[in-house]
Image (cartoon, rainbow, N blue to C red):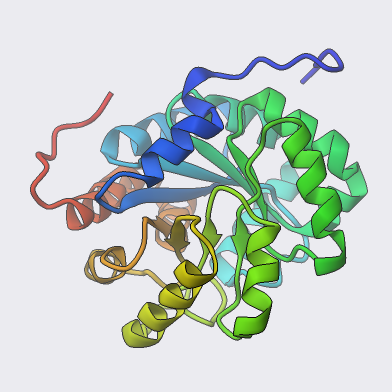
Length: 277
């Protein structure tokens, strides 16, 4: 994807303001994680369209990485498949560009590719593609200031994943390096966890996050069923589903939209199930 240096063509739906407005709504929004490059571009665009119509309020687009240590086997396998197709960054930029034309879109990545491509360069590329933000899930604390400055320069949000074990004394520091949202994992396991969730512990953690920062709180990881999503939604501004949809996209892509619709209905049961534009 050839881009002119310094040129920014951002879709109006993908601005940071649209993300802020979405997370300020009284109901919990539904985010859907999609790894970029899992399918050829034309199929990927079709899947994104279908997931958006099925009820996704925002997209998280994953930049494939060979050492996705915070992810479970389903997403790691999807990343390996994307990596085998080559041109990972270009495929991700194209996926972000399309997703951002549908819903507010945030890129999910690890620090290694950010460091390899250069934080300032990568921030410009994703901003040009229309991303509202980029969340580096394993952002080293000593790199947080540089990354935040690079993202702020191109008007990108910098959400932060906050591990459950983060001490109260460190929450303010982490929150100061974040914008867009704070991400509170619903489980302490890697993505793809399918067991029960400790809802009281998550509720306590979200209270600590809200005391440390005015930012919205988003939760994902281990939200494996619509019923669990409905319970977590009472605590946070948005619920993100990943592995269930990625599993469908990998094995039976036509099921991804129906699965998304089931989660959307659980979060907002009083809304009609008519597809959205």
